[in-house]
Image (cartoon, rainbow, N blue to C red):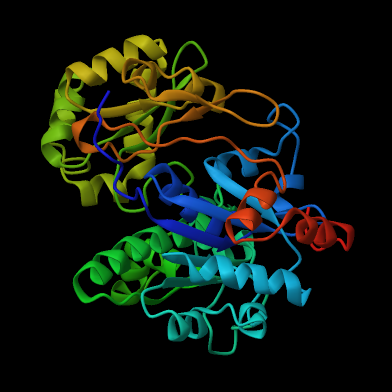
Amino acid sequence: MSTQPLPLDGVTVVAVEQAVAAPFATRQLADLGARVVKIERPDGGDFARGYDTAARGLASHFVWCNRGKESVAIDLKDPRGLAVVRQLVAGADVFVQNLAQGAAARLGLDAATLCAAHPRLVAVDISGYGAEGPYAHKRAYDMLVQCEAGLVSVTGTPGQPVKAGIPAADIAAAMYAFSGVLAALLRRATTGRGGPVEVSMLDALTEWMGHPLHHGMHGGESPERTGLAHSVIAPYDAYATSDGERVLLSVQNDREWRRLADQVLGQPGLADDPAFATNAARTANRERTDAAVARALGALTVEEALAALDAAGIACARLNTVADVVAHPQLAARNRWREVESPVGALRALLPPITLPGGAEPRMGAVPALGEHTDANLRALGMTGEQTAALRRDGVIV
């Protein structure tokens, strides 16, 4: 085990956050060693706590996005509660919020206001559509932003657009907020000043639309929805095997097509056939291309198909279920699973994707109960037990 400090040891983050976008961003900071103080409403907390009860009674979204944080349950609408949060922010390095547009500014918790008062602070505003423009005050849930960014228009089958099965807009915004914080902290290390960071879900997800966006913008046509297939590459799809499974393969160039035709399809003549010899030809003749691949793989079991494709150097994959991923041999071989504590006991969790130098383990702390760390944080601010008790009697804290 490495004895090196984690990159963000000593960094304190205060977050007024809910749902996914901000919580997932600050969880990355917590994993890298930051102390993250999560401000929650006393009446139920982050509403993601109530999404489901799949994690042994806890909400799966909340468990995923909130490990390693301290929960302080405090009413921001009460001047005494807001004063406490401002005290916490005054001692912090980073502040993150994703309240409804305009709400943070009304509380004096927007990035511009806080950075003016605390020049070393890095403050992040995460919004749906940005602070200005005709959409600034529209409600911005993940599915809605997926639609506005065009992701849904290129996802699904020719007859049915579908949203992504994960909260892609939330995750995109979270990861840009995470990288924005790291960049701002690096700048502060050299200039002594923090500053505001702004991330919108629409901006983040539109950036992720890179290929279809540029294809449509410069080529004049938006890519068609093709299910698991690729709009401009063939063969690139999932094909049934004899045992009822499916294998996805991707041929990226004509050299790979030649190997596939010879070693897997058993039809070396297809390599030079004008109807299949180039990717443009194969895409134009997609049905015939797919039929040739389907016939060959349909005669093999999934294991036989994967072995043949691997031997020919063709990129391929199983079409896994969530249960398959949990049992994935590659994740097991690389020891990617850990356990984190929670109010209901230990829960399985995946190591974050960033592998740190020297073998340093990310700090995968416990999932907090609502208000679990309220008293400790108020004591650290100098509040007496009597003052804390008065706030609790008035419903300002939990």
